[in-house]
Image 1: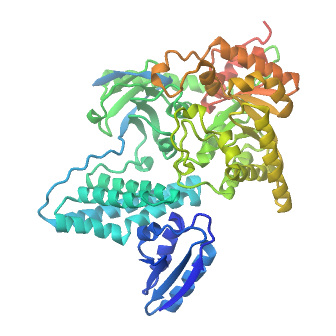
Image 2: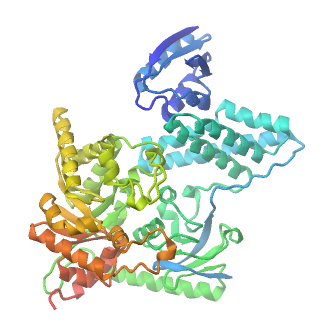
Image 3: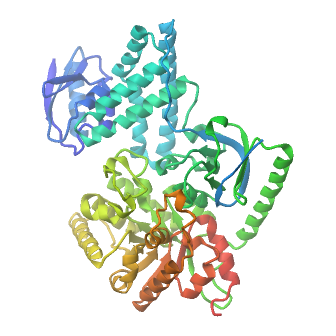
Length: 85
Length: 542
C-alpha cells in the first residue's frame, strides 16, 4: 500500500466538481483507492460518500492506494490533488 | 375543445402543441412486487436513460453557457453511477420487495437527508442535486419522460408558474408561448415573453391534470384566451390571423437601419434590454442602437456556485465585441427579492423587496462585487462598455462603490492586467434616489430609471402579488412626475437619463417621454421597431 498526506488549499474544499473528477481518476486504476479524514475512510470511487466527508480548505487528508498498480495510482492522484485542490 | 380566459401579458397569436410542465412533487406510491429482478432491471434501464438525458443537457450547456457551468450535469451523471446509491436501491427492492419508483424516491430522500444534515452550507445545498437526480429517475421509471425542454418539439409551455431558474434552462427557440395558472403582469415569465416576442397568458384557471403534452392549442394574446384542442374552423381562423400578424411585422422590418428621429428633428436612443449573451441575436435582429440594460444575474442563476471572474469576463467581452462599438450597459448583480439563488444563502426575509438585495449584497460582501468589477473592467478594453449600479438610495452608497472601484483598480494595476475604468451610472429605482437625483447627478455619468421597482416602491405595491394587479397603475402621475424630475436634474449637470423599466416600452407614453427630453429608452428587443415607428411619426414640439 502507498499513501500520501495532503492539506486542502482550494477555498471550497472537495466540492462536487473536483469530487466527480477525483472519482473519474480513481476509477482508472485497479487498485483500491481511499481517502481518510478524521479517522473516517471512504473509497475514492464512492462519489456521494466522498462528498459527505465534507473536506474543507485547511483539512489534512490521507490518500491511499492498494493493489497492483498502486504506484501509478498514487502518482496520478497526487498530481490531481496538487493541480485541483 | 376546452377554452379558458386569462390575462394577456404580451400580445400575439400562435397555434401549436402544448408541453405541460408539472412541479416535481411526485406522489410515489409504495407497491409490493413479485419479481425483484425485473424491478432491478427497470432501475438499471432508467439509470441509463437518465444518464443519456444528462449527457445531452451537458452538451447543450457547454455550447450555451460554457464548460464550467455545464459541469454540474456531469456531476449529476456521476452521482447516478454512485455505487452506494445504486446498491441502496437494489437492496431495497430485493429485501423489502418494493417497486422501483419507491426505491428510487426513498433512496434519494435518504441521501438528500445525509447532505442536508451536514454542517457545511455548500454541502447542504447538494441535497438538491440528489433530489434532482432521484426525481429524474422516478420520472423515467413512471414513463413521464424528460422534464427538460432540450429534446422537445417547438411547444406552448403550460405550467402552474415558472421561476427564473426554470426559464433560464429553457431552449428559447422551442417556445411558442407561455400559459400559466399563476404569475403576475410583471413576473419573469412576462419579461421573457416580451423579450422573445411571443404571446403569454397568466392567471389562466385551467386544470393541468386534464391537459396532456402534445395536445394542440391556440394562444391568443390579444383577447387573453387559450383554446385546447381547437375545432377546425378555429384552426383556420387562427392561421389567417397569424399570417396577418406576420405581415404587420414585415412592415416594421422596413424601419431597420433608419434613425430614431422625429420629423422636427428630435433624436432619442433606443436600446435593448437583455438577460444573457444568448439574447444578443434578438438585439441584432431588431436593430437596437445598443444595450441599455444587460442583466448580469443570468451568470449567477441556474447554477450551484459563483461564476468565476474568467467566466464573467468572457461573457461581457463577447457582448461588447458582438455589439462592435455600440454602447453596452451592464448592470451589476441584482440578486435578492424575487430573484433567489440558493448558493448565496440569503435566508428568508419578511419583506424581500425591501431587503438584502442588489447593491446591498455587493457592499456587504465585497468579494462577490470585486470579482464582477474586475471582469467588467477587463472586458471594457474590448468595446464600449458602461457599468450601472442598481438599488441606489444615497450618495454614501455611491461613495462606497467608488472606494471599492479604486481598490479593484489598484489590484489590476499591480497585477499588470489590461483594464479600463468605464463610464459608470446608476439605476434610479427608489423614491429616495429620485428626491436626491440633483446630488447624485454630480457623482455619476448617467441615470437609468428602473420603472418597475420605482413604481412598486412609490405606490407601495408588491409586483409579485397578483391580487394587487388592479391597484397597480403604471401611469400613476407620481411616477411620471418623478421621471420628469430625474431627467431635469440629470440635464442640469450635463448628464444623460434613460428609462430601462417596462414603462419605457409603453407605446402610449413614448411621445410624452420624447417631449420630456428622455435621452434613451431601453426596451425588450421586440419593441424597438414599434417605438421607432412612433418616434418617426410624432412631433417633439407641440
